[in-house]
Every structure is written in structure tokens, then in C-alpha cells.
Image 1 (tube, rainbow, N blue to C red):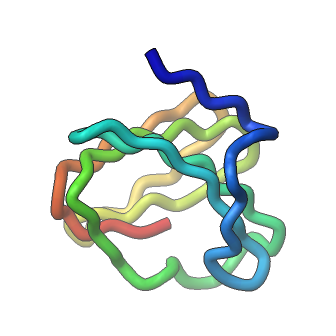
Image 2: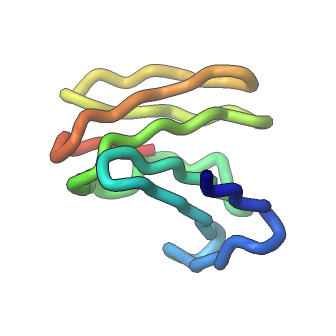
Length: 89
């Protein structure tokens, strides 16, 4: 069993105003992103990765983009991303 405590996870600045913490198994990745600069007028550039991803919106709001579809998400919402699928926030 793997347990990840938020305060013990490495925080990596992914750009000015945003940092992430992540954990993964061989196939699945969970990503915690803290945004400090929103709202932005445009989504970040799309990216992909080999792991499937699950993310949960704890507070605030975001725009999730995948397959050119934009979905507004708020507290309690979850998004799932298949392996290799380009997506953005």
C-alpha cells in the first residue's frame, strides 16, 4: 500500500502561479494542482503522458479541455484522462 500525504509530496512549480504534486502507480496517476493566478483567459498548452490520470476539483473552478471539448468544473467534480490523450486546464 502506498500512502501520500499532501504536505510530504514534492511541490513542483509548473509555471508562474501554479504548482503540482503527483503520485502514480504503473498505470494510474493522481495530480494535485494548486493555481494561484486565475482565472486565465486561455487554457495551458495541451499535454499528454503515459499514465491514466484522475483529478478532483477540491475548490475553485477550472475549464477542462480534451478533444477540443471544454467543460467547466467546480468543487467535487472529477475528470479522467486516458493514457496518451492530450488535455489541458
